Image (cartoon, rainbow, N blue to C red):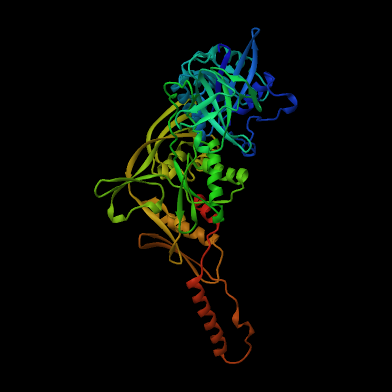
Length: 595
């Protein structure tokens, strides 16, 4: 055990984690040169296309230091705030962390939040300044920031370049010398913490775990403590580029287990694996359940695909534990699921993965957050979508979630960012200068306001320089109302939203204008209305498609034309009574991009 090192790489998005991981794998010869490619651990097409890490990836490396062989278990983690749950799971399986900071940009918001997460778990932090080969790098300034943040010595900070391989040998040495070996008792009853899982169509559910105490051998009869399920360990092994079977996985090591598990609910992230005959006394204190921030309905385009969608979501949940879902139905869209996501990017990625990995075409409704509604008797009810809103007459008040946002930016952009936050009903908490021309701003913002387009606007105002991080702070009373969209007097529940009183009229007006552009013209006039209760606050009319029925009339009395037009009018009226207006999928998505 003294020669095992478990560590993860944490950083803000785009600071070069995956590229540096490539160099570590190259230097330790874990991956043959002919198999090497950029961001080799990002094995999803979606990750490569977008240039972001979505899943954390575990891999084992062998490293010789002073004539001794060491086993290094590396976990590469995502940097985006929407995937911070992946980071928390990786941290739970490690004793050390490489904190990567971009030498051209310095410390950013997600760097700080990931760092605090690692410190809470008592991880040994090794600070590394990346991209030192670039002309625009400012390693001295960034060193000042790191020293101020961590309180470490300058000599502890390593300089590296993921592109050229500069500083990689020093990083590996620092991992061996500074990161503590895992602590555990090889002779104690088995205790292994599950930190990830994946579905394989041949082997069933495969669990990834870290052995905290004891040893797991092939053929052992194992038990999952929280679910109470019992299985045989058909195959155990370690994680290289591919899974490598082994006879046993020892104390302190990271590995995988195949037990022919077919139902995804049997394997829970944070659960403990132990032996059936000699079980451990108690489960490992896992990490907290994930709390979804954004809720949206996901419906199959073809109603017959409902069960396929359920299966797809269960398999996806195995690989992405931060996704949660419950069945629901909608008048407009039929049966589907109410899904909880950690943010808008997470929602987009899940929708994309459903299409690519499971061939599921889905419609996603307008995303919203959960609110607390208090009635006149003081009874509290949590609602996740506008259709669950009780009658207005029974409501005493509504509370909405507020977040504490940390924005780090250059001083040039303070004005625009302040205006953006104040327009979103934000409250300035604190503003402090970090170093040079960089400032850290703390705002309390309603989650419902930032969930749709805040991040995009922040990036465009700051020309991509501002970094943003947040956590749920509290719930506060707010004047919220339900805004309904009616098509020919019929409510489209999938387009209903909860919004602040001050935003309702302009938001309703913009919605109607947008839907007028997107809904195709019908054989009859379609009235698009925005309503609060019974009161219509905005209206647009989609004009009917008309055929020139009088074209065949030539000469004669005007009454002939009149007769044809009256017949057409009667037909249009009858059509309007029985006609149904289909709302295209891009209309649901357009609501997100109203500005």
